[in-house]
Length: 287
Ligand SMILES: [Zn+2]
Image 1 (cartoon, rainbow, N blue to C red):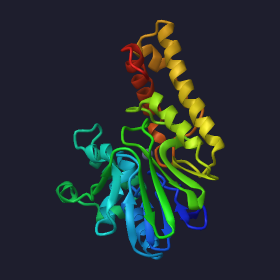
Image 2: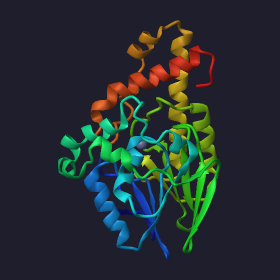
Image 3: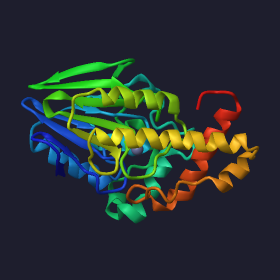
Image 4: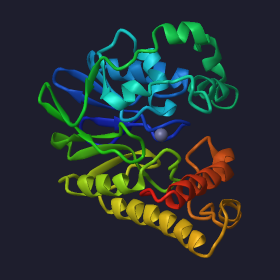
């Protein structure tokens, strides 16, 4: 794992989110779990070298942040916003999150097949959130403070984890650093406000949900990119373009690559981002 600060570690190198942990004087706090089974097992082992896992925090409900919880059963309780609990691995989501985790195995984690649970086994105990909150929540663990800040936008239950002692914030997918931003189910309006909230933190290290570790200056890049997306689709609508015309004509594929292991999703991301914004803007809703 990459050591970001004296006690904060992350991994930005494989498919899925950037799973991370912070070592305290009283055990380890995990922030998001690897989607790939062998990586989840490896990360738990790496964390437990430093002491018992006291808490596992999920920053959102998307599968790339929570599927690995399964491999942290029996570690400390999972902590998440109430909307993460409500949306946790819902089989009704399209695509099904269980299927999405499974179909990554042949290409990204063939050895993981052997420890990948069948659907019934998985859903019997996927290690759901056990400690649930609605706004912000602060945990004190050893000498460390974990401020779980409600920062909705990318998803409804999105949080950032601020660790002042490390001068670091783990933003989850409120920041996609130097890679494509997914905004299918997002509220961009809320997302911008959340970026502003994070920008007020006195930190040196920004650990994004995807892409390399960065700093506060990148928050402005993320903000501008979101505004560009909204404005570009709004301009298409103003020109009288239909949804299909917007999809055909609008793409930011040349701006950033897709995060590691998901290059095949590029066109899908462009189409779904346009579609999502078009629907909201033409229905008179905030984007
Ligand atoms: Zn993600």
